[in-house]
Image (cartoon, rainbow, N blue to C red; front, side):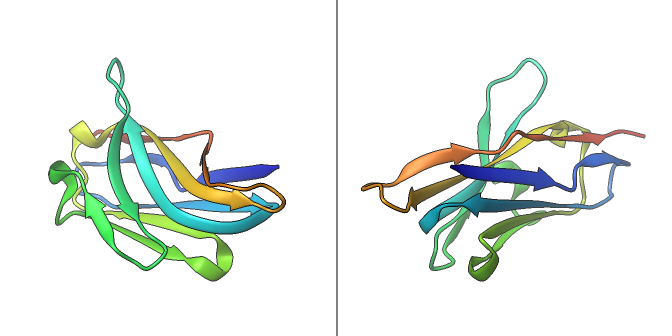
Length: 121
């Protein structure tokens, strides 16, 4: 069994910052890429940022220059530092990981439960 647990969401004023964390635990053999997605109210889930196990990153255009994704491979944890937040960043943020569990061949996608980020004055 694998669990991804997010933390760090909350209410912040426009222009403020938040740092999200997502820790993967369980019978993990190897983690390939990790990422953050978000789902605004009434909209589809979209990729925000992703990072490979070698540190390569990619971002959706709307967050470039404001958000930074990073990971600690020793802790199986991925972070999302969000600066200069805007009301349109309001969404439920989900982390995911493409990983392989012990005793199972192949990599599969696992998701966290989501954490709410609200940007409002």
